[in-house]
Image 1 (cartoon, each protein chain N blue to C red):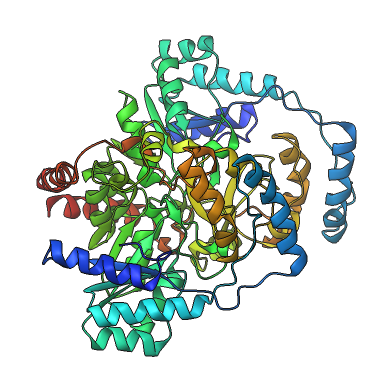
Image 2: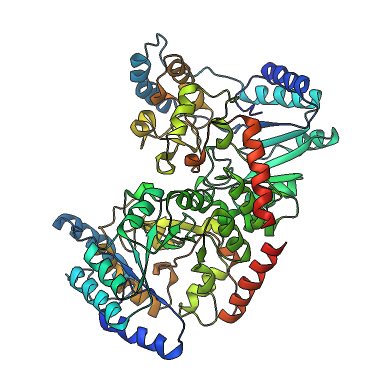
Length: 311
Length: 311
């Protein structure tokens, strides 16, 4: 469950909902906030002006602005929910929580997974006590989990997985470009103990993704995905659209400020069915996305991997 | 044999030398010239000025300038050598030769391999008559083979190989990030029929790479590789150094003009053992490079792949 953008009480509700539906383990993903994130007044004003024309085009009455949220407190409250609800697996993106947090989670039996986009991040995560490490290749859709220098975090899965596997002792979960049994079998060959698929599930019938989003995916190609900071302030991969193109070259505010400032635009765009202003996060394997049920996809993944490895 | 930068008579000599050493098949790689490549006088002058300070630092008497070569004629003469010498495999980078050239090669029994960095390039190569297609993932060292829009050619191997394999009928050769048996086994799982390794051989004892180059590789990490156009005008991946950093953000002349203008600098830098001005082309799998003999590396690759696939 991707809870990076959720509020604490939504996390609790959804965790309970999952529990009511299954006794199987599940995971919650949290974004580690960058508490140093700030912007100068003139940078904020500049971004307000840039985004204003989109607000007007989308018929929003409110001008773009920053809500002034207490990110630290929201994050802490979500961690408390994870503790209180005894979530089986908690994965983190954008950084490593402090040792007290990790200790608290592990004490309660929660499996801690860290996202790494290069070898040094993986080593740092292992030293911090991660139980498993998600090695996120540059093919991945959505946010780059990079917490070292941005340019250090764009390593393709074929190179990333074996180098991470050599450097750490805990299990490696391959993420990025894995769409079918071929990607799973390849990840295992490269030294991963498991895989994480995102884009492959977005077009499933049960997926809560906006129908426009699903449709865009089923017709998108690998070349159409692009890296952008325009939506959130952090580098993320999605299907290119007008907003990404027009914002190219504009310096975004740091995450999560840019995210908060673009949120009303994106909400309105979804309401008005204007995908040119929505983030359509997608990995580079997007041609392999299919409109299946989750059950059909899972059966295909499991039996297909078995066939490939038995050959 | 990478013959992209060689002169026709050098190609002939080296092909004959290879023939005298082995009866086994071998390949020659050629760069397809972009005949439209040109630059305005003020762009050329600007680059001459930028490069001048490096010329002075390296003690070169000649100022940077363009030699005014007939790229078309050099390329044609190299093709003639390939025909005349009956080279078993000829691979192409940066584009697809005209149909007469491809016909001529195939008529003489030469296997034609095309480099593709996205699905559409692969489809175009197959339609042109390629016998096999090298799918070059973004992990690869050296030049991107991209001949469509530059930004369309940065797909990671994990996503690129299966999507190319689905789109074409001829065999796919995986390139980019493949450094050891794990990468070979993974490539085969993804749908490749073969692999192409570059960086893995650069540190071999028999490799003709400059000792400084080899040494830089044996200590380099995946995060240190960067994409640059500063050396040749075409995007290529190498270990970051002072020249790459300082040229970042400077618009390079189109290939091959930038390459010709930086050639004397690079030659002098190699002579003076100044790796900060040399191109140190390397893939993102560079941590896996070892100082082995070619025989040792080949044995490891072959037996290791067998072990992984027999599991």
